[in-house]
Image (cartoon, rainbow, N blue to C red; front, side, top):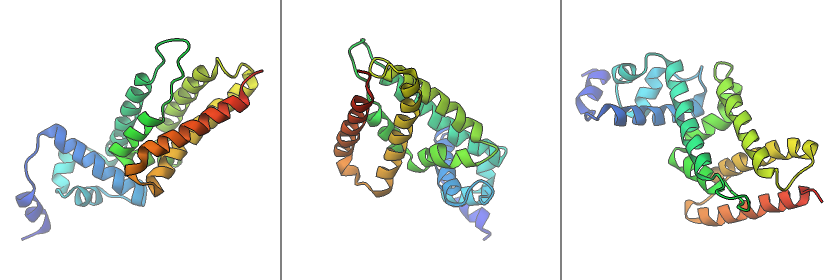
Length: 200
């Protein structure tokens, strides 16, 4: 029996939304492993344990699939940032727990979004657009502490890069059972940085 027929016979039926999520997750893993040009729809199908036909029923092209991974992460990150917005002027929001939660939900998609997409000419605009938004968010949060405009223009992107790279570094080497410890450590670090940069 051909492999496609075997997969078709053994692949359980899932609701479209669940199948889409399964394929997007598998695509993130495949794209992180081999890059956009080095990944085929066949590779994605194999990673997901489905046939190419099933992948093409949901995504017409490989570009559509790559964009779907990025858009799903962007949506989750946007929601995470919204949940950490301060509710009063004296509150100090901290996004590391939310970032780590998004990253843990799909580590390869998070890596693809933050690291890999920036180097893919077709998709770099997704990374750039979110980076602009994240830096603006950081600038607003640092405003009460770092009043020097020049210092804040440097400090915001520095904090953003530190947080995202820190989360990915923890995914790479960390122990999920110690996530709370990581959040506490990176939180202390960011607060120490902001204190050092604060206007006097």
